[in-house]
Length: 411
Image 1 (tube, rainbow, N blue to C red):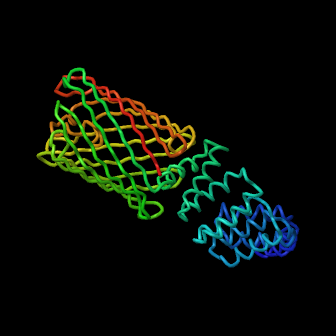
Image 2: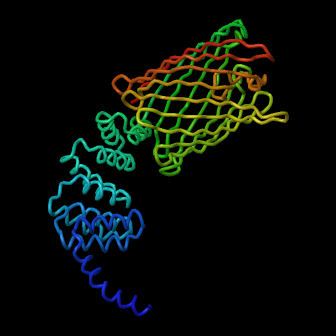
């Protein structure tokens, strides 16, 4: 039996070899792609791709795929040799420019990547892939104006491009070195307080090479009394993926504002347009209140979805706050409608000074909306309204209506 099997193998081997040798370039290309993507066998994929090119040396798609294979296996000299050869042939295929620029971008040759992308966009000005990659490279190279131009062009072509939308938000923070802002908030209570609340905030933002720094001054009239607060916030970059939020505040008017406040969060820009945050907030009136926060966000086409929670432990129980936010972007990074719904009070809320009275342990429902828009890119306006139904005493609820206006000038 063994002898028969061996005899059959000897007979069939030449036919198998003949069959392999007579595969078309397309068939070899298909097998190479299967070896690379399904089996993760790049050595075999490279071998099959070379065989395909021997049969069809001018088959551009196969040459580009060989360059990609060399890129993925970190054989950069071979990858560049393939792409240089295609460049000398004056190849104009969109995929060639994407593959070649990606090689240089992934290996920190941003200037070369931009040169390739600019040439590719001369032939394919409507290419979403080329425009998105140019936005990424320019942003990584701190060319924020060029990055914004590329991404905005892409979003005009396809406003539902998720990656472009997420990138536009990141770029927006760096397109102007400075920004000054003013915000006004009005709160009316139907039962809880006799007097309305008025809060005015002024801010100055400066973009630095390591991240943004914001100085804020707040004035409030609450409980028929006035007070002021000063705050400093920073967003230092740690890497392409991670950055921090660091904030601190002080007020000598305890009751209107907490005497001290602080906060630190680690933020991550995750793959597939996800983002996440974890950190703490601290408020000090006559005692410290510690709150721990976490959030997850996701960009999808024109939308941004976010869910945030604040957890406040104490000796008796753990108080919780949850807020869901949806934004719908109409054009650029600063033009959107937002809808918010949640329970509980957050330390960023205008109600935060009530936390010392432990109102955060009682039930609060909130719902509201916001509209932000830009005029000539540097003038940013916002308007919002929020409704609160608050259990300010056990089994006693009241309504609160908040209205806010804001203006920011970027320069």
